[in-house]
Image (cartoon, rainbow, N blue to C red; front, side, top):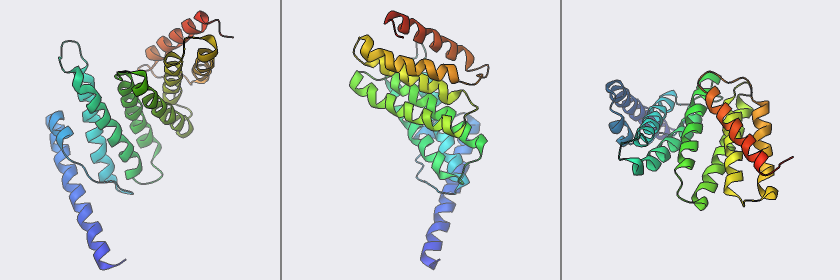
Length: 218
């Protein structure tokens, strides 16, 4: 390795370590706004410190977005930008760390990323805005099913994306039954969910069933 390149890599690693130390301090203090405002430039790869820094920022943005939607917060307009922040940082975190990622790390990052994608889609102000967001959710859910087939997460969020694709299409059986059938298929194939996911999965199954009956889907 050329000396100049080695020095550049060393300086980048030192910068990431300083970023991570600051983010850890802010996280310990519960200062989510300061975390979200902190610029994190690292991209990896094979950089565990970068993975941690990106994950801390993604988690903070996700929590801020969720808090902005709480009844009475008066800050709902801030939620989309916070979810965008979470999505961007989870995406980098996945590729920033050692590859292949340990299963526990991949599962933890996928859970946050999928939730942020769904929440961002649900804040779309039009079908034109929602459709690409929903497609991104469907793609990430498919990756989660491949990476962790024993987890219900990828199946749940994939079914959520299929259900939304039906709702975003024309209000006809021809348009809605295929994605509703896909949602039903994913829910049927889903492994047993954990206690935290079970109510959401059951509610989605009821919604899909109601729509399939409404359109007399086979």
